[in-house]
Length: 111
Ligand code: 5GP
Ligand code: ZN
Image 1: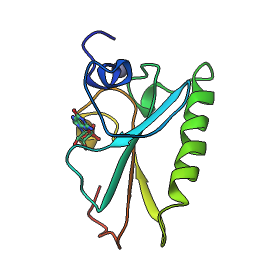
Image 2: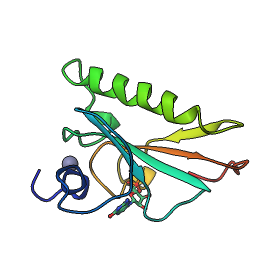
Image 3: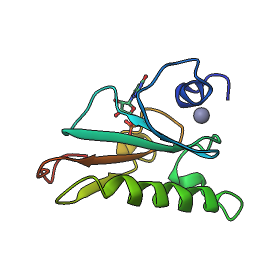
């Protein structure tokens, strides 16, 4: 998707602080962290949101969660996974992403 911010991060047109990468999934640090550790995990393929998961792309989503589980091993005490979907949830980047938040006890309000 030419106009998608996270597709540009995948292609390298926009730099990011990568923490994990393989053929289909990328994880990088959020530019505006809401917790001591705030990582975004995305499929490299453009999927707009959690509302656009289908039998054709759900294996990619499963793989995102395998990566989340691996990255979460570094987060002593646990972590939160959040995916905002659509305007009511405050999704600002229309490319499916999972926030990993951790590194400290999290408030219930923290998204
Ligand atoms: P959303 O609001 O869609 O759930 O999450 C989008 C996230 O992307 C936000 O937490 C925001 O800080 C992050 N973000 C927006 N632009 C950039 C960017 O250029 N680089 C990085 N690393 N994160 C970004
Ligand atoms: Zn995209």
